[in-house]
Length: 302
Image (cartoon, rainbow, N blue to C red):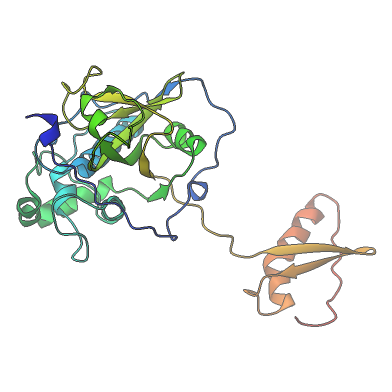
C-alpha cells in the first residue's frame, strides 16, 4: 500500500484545562544528555495497515516499552482492544481522540495481543470486545497521563516515565519518512493528523520518533527524526506513577516578636484541632531530642 493512501487516525483532542501538567507527576529536570534513546524499544515498528489506528498503536507500543522496562519481559498488547473498547460518550468513528484513548487506558487498561490480535475497522473492534478481554486488560492500566508543552518537559518525560505520544499535522514531506524537514506550509498540502511516539532525541536537536507504518517506511525503517519545532499539536506522557495530589492543609508562619504566628487552612474547624493534628506530634519529636516547643494559646478562634 502506498503511504499516501494510509488513513490518518487522530481526531484532535479538544482543549481541557483539567489535564494534569507534567509537574503533577514528576519535576522537570534541569540538565540533559546531548542525545538519548529510550533503552527498552519494541522489537520492530508495527504496521496499522489501512486502518486509522495510529493512536492505539502508539499507546500499545508505549505501554509495551514501559512494561518491558518494569518487568524485564516483553508482553505484546492489543491495539484492537484500545481501538474498540470505548466509552458510549467517546467518538464513535474511525480514528480516535487521544485524550479519550488515554482515559480508557487509565480506566480499563489493555488486554494482551493473544486475546484480541490484529486490527480491524472500529465497528468490528467494538463488536468484538468481551468481558474476558476487559478482565485481562485491568493489570495493564496506567495510573495517570499528563499534557506536555515544552522541549524540556518532553525530555524529562522520556527519561523519567518513558516514550511520549504526540499528535502531529501531516504534510506532503512526512510521507517520505527518514529525517523530516519542517513542513513548508505555503507549498505542502495538509492531509490530516497522525500520532507517533517520541523515543529519544539526537545531538542536532531532533526527536527520534516511532511510527506505525511498518519497518519499511523511510530510510530509518519505521522510525524518523523531526526538528524540535515540528508541527506537533498535542503531547502526552503516560505513567504508572500516582500523580501528586494537593496538600491536605496549608500552614503559614509569621514572626511576631518572640513568637511565631501559625495560620492553618480552613480544613481545621478550631485551633485546638489543628494543634492536635500538627503541633502535638512536633512537640513530641522535640521532647525526644531534649528540646521543648512552647505553644501560646491563641487569643481568638479564627
